[in-house]
Length: 440
Image 1: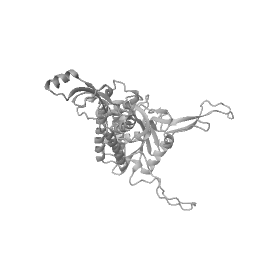
Image 2 (image 1 turned 60 degrees about the vertical axis):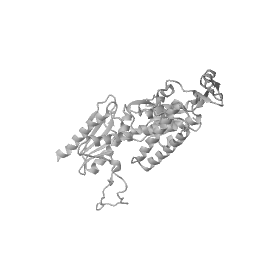
Image 3 (image 1 turned 90 degrees about the horizontal axis):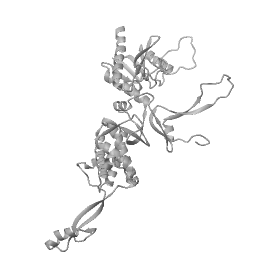
Image 4 (image 1 turned 90 degrees about the vertical axis):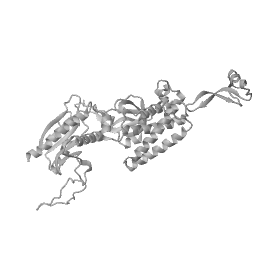
């Protein structure tokens, strides 16, 4: 806080993760001329995750509704926005998804930077040797038995301590870097966008630099290092090598293909804070599951129609009507979230909103928009899709009719088994689409 306002990270403001709003209390005085207090409050805007605001101050934004966020991200292969603030995530059962491994690799290699800056952990290991240039401690008894008894008077048995980087924690790091390189090579063979491939190549170059820094460590192909107390986390890492704590957790996760969950706020994996756009994620999840669970119907993304469908049609100026200007059709497009079609005929228009319906009907603006689309596309069935609140029954709801357009609402529970709820929704969508056929 300063005299002129609040200091905040510009990337958080630029990306629109939060916004300030003026809020007036509900219990306003009866006297209209009386002054009231107007507060400025900070609101999250459509993202969940740990959002850094300024300095060491961050705010954890939780999902508005109980939701299996990790499951939806896995279904949609949805991109996450990684910020330079560490958040701890809990381990998830089962094998890690591809997007999880991508994130683990990136954060593990990033954690290696701080670790190498602190310096590698080294140990003094006892060695024994037979030499003519002694160092350390001469083993007198063994020298007499093994050397002097055979007439060798120029060599002695010695014992000494040698400083080495070949320790179980370092062997775990080496194995994880090697695996990360293999994974990145596999990812480069996949059909990814040019920007993603460039990012993977940059990450791979960093992995090669880390591998060079670990070149004096002897590998352990049998992975006996996995039983080491430091690697297992049962023995505390010295404070002077604190960067090992995060790096070793991530290294073990990579080597054992452990996944993590985006739900909750506590865990063992220190990852960059992963922010998710809940509105876009929910919309994509509904669209993908409808494509999978509906039979014989075409499920389209109305935001990416090719060719685009214009909102306006050409119109002639009526006789005896004077206009100052006749506008062209322009760039206005019909862009519903989901179109259900069959043979080029629109059977159902759906608008997906990550907003609960608390007073029966959906938001007035959403209804006006979707009914306009229905009129333009000559469709009589429209639907708004919402997450279900805890005290609401999930399923299909009839709002009513606006002219020839019947307005539906579907509430889906995202908490326990969202896929089961999407199968029920798919059956409801198929039933609504059959109404058009029966009417004809």
